[in-house]
Length: 145
Image (cartoon, rainbow, N blue to C red; front, top):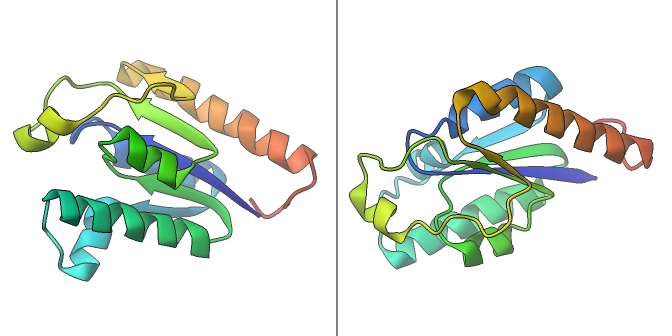
């Protein structure tokens, strides 16, 4: 059984910090987009390069059991639909980043499960993750989440 949390938002919004907090609190496997790009030596941010990255993240999710945290900008709604996370957290804590090309193409999620507007709200996000995980456990899917 897999339970996937997608953390999306602009560069510098706190995705990695929140992902690390989730792993600390609940365990699981954290995939950070920058780490994955580095492993593939692929710093191409064209449409094709971004599509390759979404595909990589999707494949990692599909190959991993338990709690999976995907930490990446994932700028397009169509990409987020492909990922098909069980819980999408939108970190809306910054209005722009150092990557202006990404800022221009970023589509705010249409209906994230959680929207974090300020860092003081991260406890709310952690509580929501906990409730979701406990709900899955109650359904007796997989006690190893």
